[in-house]
Image (cartoon, rainbow, N blue to C red; front, side, top):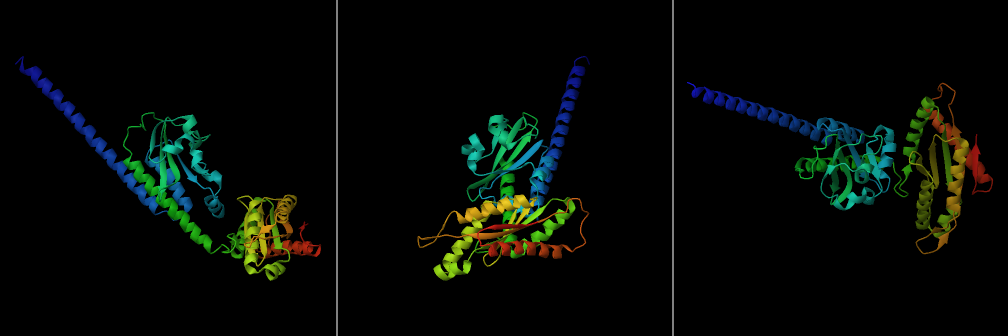
Length: 373
């Protein structure tokens, strides 16, 4: 009896340990299943995103919560400001998604650039990772920097941060996050292409700027915001001087070159939040958000100088002096409680006022700016 009791006790302890191990394995299997279910749900949410906003929310918030991360950022290469202009058109403020970062090109990844073809896991380094987790975001202890690649081209990265130093280790398998990055890259490309398709119907095919339909729609939206928020809204009505003579003297092909070049020079003087559209023929309209008459007149003068001071180069190698006349008007609601005039009526009157200022600039000798208060 004295020998069997210790053996029985040892067997009981071994059984207890086995049951504990089995319970641990079952618990881990259940957690893994829950994680997989959350990740599958995330995949479906990202793939089913119908808008840029919905996709970004899924990437930045749902991913963070489902993966139990402390911080997630998304960096996108946007050398032409195309994506940022889409955000402006969608009325998405940068303040809504501070975790959404933009870069001009790959070199802004710094020391990561040369290695950013596979996920990079390890301890957080301010020098190496600081630009991907800018203040006031929480500083992670370990990170996974996962490249987003489409058609063998780096389009950005999804950046995962954890407060736990052991969460991301260099030797860890990266199959899952590589799968995740491929889903995100495809979804970003698809949503951006969808938004571009929507914009095609609102874009002038010759100059590449917006068309009259877009400007009229945007104008009504901005008047509504101006009424609610009280900031000033300014309108520039721009006309290329003696454009008919340009077409008659050097031909319509050269005239098209002039239109494209003038549109580009106007655009160069504007902010991302401003709106530029070809209103018809040789006329352009600019909406300057939160700009008083004096500021708008200054922008108009910069545009006038930008066109007049540099001849336009034509396909045959010759150059052509071109000038524009600009009319400026400003709409204000500060200190007033709304307006009874329908928005569409006020939009027409507002543009008509800028057009009257343009007429005065033409009558005054062209190549000048007239502002009507």
